[in-house]
Image: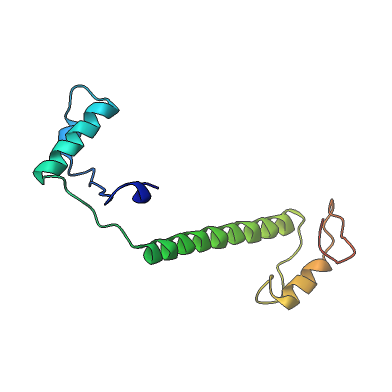
Length: 121
């Protein structure tokens, strides 16, 4: 967000910036002054920041991880519902493959209505 307004954005390593952590009076104004002084003196420990393409790939990887985790949670919930209704395990290797989903649609699960498309509603 700051890049259009400044020549260069520098991110300091918070683990190495001891001057701010040890200050007795902590306000944003004092912290900013301390950081500016450290930067001017060449003592501000910087961290590497990724370029735009790398940052985009990181966001995509993080989003994919979230989606996979959510999918796993939903699959576990389906298995839990089947177990709660005493429905035996799916005889197919994968309950969520085409064959497994067809088997799942034939199972009598109380409290669920099936839509015209055969998907539980």
